[in-house]
Image 1 (cartoon, rainbow, N blue to C red):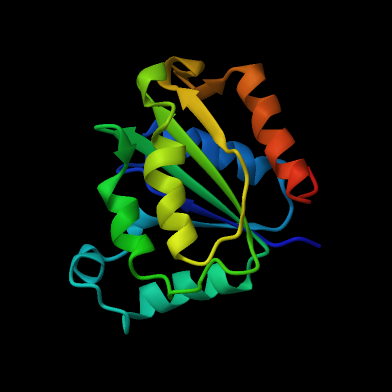
Image 2: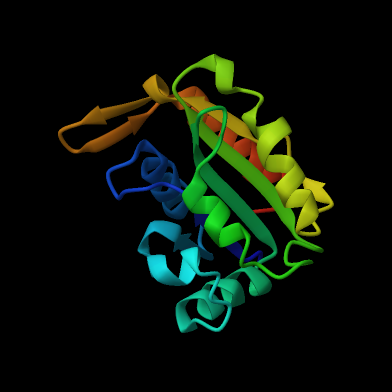
Amino acid sequence: MTKTVIINGANARTSRVNAIQHYIQDSLEEVEAIEVFALPAEDLISANFASEAIREANAKVDQADVVVVLTPVYKAAYSGIIKTYLDLIPQKGFEDKHIIPIAVGGTPHHLLAIDYALKPVLTALGATSISHGVFIIDKQIERTKQGFTIEEDIQTRIEQQLIRNKVTV
């Protein structure tokens, strides 16, 4: 069975990005999440490679076959929070893994953030199998009293990326 890990670069549990994380977790059997906002801030900022929390997160990445890199888009790029964690992944940490980038942004103008901001970092981490990814506009994830509702088209696009990367949905 394919092991999947989600690296969530949102800055809060109430983010629309978290709705995507939970949707993926509900869709898959063997999936773990690294919520970067829950990792010790001091370890992230000081690049503490020896931190127990960082080592545990990196072990999840190491054991995964598929890595979903999930980030909001701010100022035409991935979040600073996710970058603090990506900097702590070993140099070839994404080697021999399928990478699925998913970004949530406010407008279609941020569409190229995956290709021009995020993918070069993923490549620097040794990724050679990077999917086209999924770009989601905020309004495609509606906030409701019960949480969030994700548009059906977005659900389909995410499932297609998972299936293409040999993840059983």
